[in-house]
Length: 277
Figure 1 (cartoon, rainbow, N blue to C red):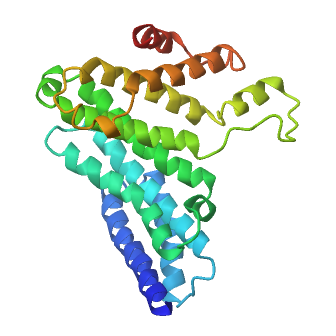
Figure 2: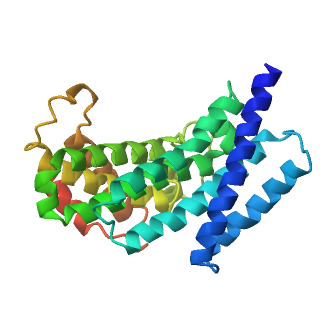
């Protein structure tokens, strides 16, 4: 058991030094990038820990720092893809690589902290961010593909698969925290805050996630009827119309109710709802 733990610890150490090499390479492209600078600073701290022969007395903190490095480096790489408008030839491979990188912290937690919940090791915000970043990446990719009508005609099933995967990640993000039950002894003096927390809306990112899910469900409904692959995936297939309707209704109620006047627009959500319902 000790040997297994030590071997798995070496895996984390190896990945840290590999990420350091990658970060140095990316910084040569843009030395002043804030995210790469932050990643580099954390990596220096992690490398120092290992070169000084440190023991993993606080494994949770090591994994949290490692996760933050992953988030910073992949954010830089994602921005490059967005700036390049997701090149058709290289984007599928690069996106899968980014999704794999953003999944790795959970994999390492399962290996190094077996028996512990990922959320208890990484913390709520980091876990939410990992799901959000994977879902948002696929949203941005699908948003770009949605404007390439000729590409979709030839690759409809691949497009729907990306949507399904993206919606799943975004839904997982919304499920990380439990909604606040107002009868659980929770006292909230602001009724507006109480209302949105009871719906599981804890931040602007949660609201944006809901809008992203609604849009992706709309795209799926628009194209899935013509897809030859939908019957093959019936058991695992998301009910896009139902999910989009439920999420966007909740979004509209929040934005026009407790968050009225806070700058959230509901026109697009209502237009999509008129089609989905």
